[in-house]
Length: 435
Image (tube, rainbow, N blue to C red; front, side, top):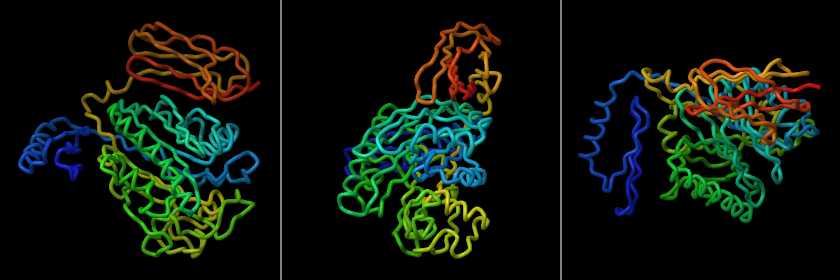
C-alpha cells in the first residue's frame, strides 16, 4: 500500500490524500487532516479491494542524443542501438534531435520498426524532441509543443492499451550554462512546464511524466523549486536531492561521459561525470505507481568519476564495449524508471478496444492496402499522416463486426502512420513507402 499526503501549511487549503493499494489510484480531498478519519478511510479502501488485480509494468527512459543529425551522426546510431537493447524501454523520450531525417534514422536503425512506433516530428526553434514507444502496448494520441525563449517543451499523449489509461509525457531540454542569466532562463522555461501541468491536473489528467535534460546545477535553483517544491507543484523526484561534483552524489550523475569534447563522437562537452542534468520526474499519482528501486542512470556504477570519463576507472555496471558506446554515443547517460498500472483481471478484456489496423505489403512499393478489424459494429475514423503530422487521407467508416480492406492512397516515398480511432480506443501502425 502506498499513501501520499499533501498537507499545506495553510489550513484553509484543501489537503489531498493519494492511495494506491492493489487498486487503481484513489484521490481523496479532505478539508482538515484528521488521523482517525485517515485510518478509517484506509481500512474502508482495503475492505473494498475485493477483486484480483494484474499489473502492466511500463519502463520509461529519457536520453539526450547530443545534436543528433545526419551530418553529426558519426556512427553513433549503432551505439544507441546497443544501449537501448540493454535498457529495454517501452517508452523512449529523446532530446536534441536536429531534423526529421535524423528522427527517422534513429527509428529505423537504432530501434526495431517491427516493434516500435514514433511520434510526429515538429521542427521547432533550435533542437527538437521525439518519443518512441512499443506499439503493442501504446497508441499515439497527440503531440503539443509549448514554446519557450530557446526551444519547445514537447507534450505527448499515449494511450495504454492494456488498461485504457492515458499517459502524458513531457520532454524538456532547458537552457545550459551556470551563470545567473542561464538559471533565470531555466526558471522561465520551468514555469511554462509547471503552468501546463497545472492545467492538466485541473482537467483530471494526472498520469504525468516530465523528463529530459533540465541542466539544473542544484536543487536550490529556482526552476527546480518551481517544479517540485511549491505548494502547487505536482512533480516528484524519486531520487531526491544531490550536490554536483561530490562523491556522495556520484551514483546520480548523468553528464559528462567524457573528459573532453570529442569531434568523432558528436562533439559535446567534457569535464567528466559530475553533474545531474537529466531527470525523470513523476506526478504524485505516477509516483504511487513507481516501482521502488527501479530509477536508474544506465551505465553509472556509483564509482566517483569526478573529471573522469564513464570508462575510467573500469566500469562495473556494463561491459567495456557498452561503456565505450555510452562515452561516444552522447555526453549524457540515459535515465529510466518503471511504473505499474493495475487493472482488475475481471475487466481486463474489456479494457482493450480490440481494434486492429495494418498496412501491407511492407514496405509498400506499388499499390498498398489498409486492413481494419473491429470486434463490434461501430463508426471509426481511419487517418493516414506523414511524419510531420500532416493528414494525407482520412476515412469515416461505418464498419460491421469483422474485417474490412480498402486501398491505400498513392503516396510519395517516406514513412507514414495509419491510425484507427473507435469509440473505445485507438490503434496506430507506422509503414514505409518505397518508390
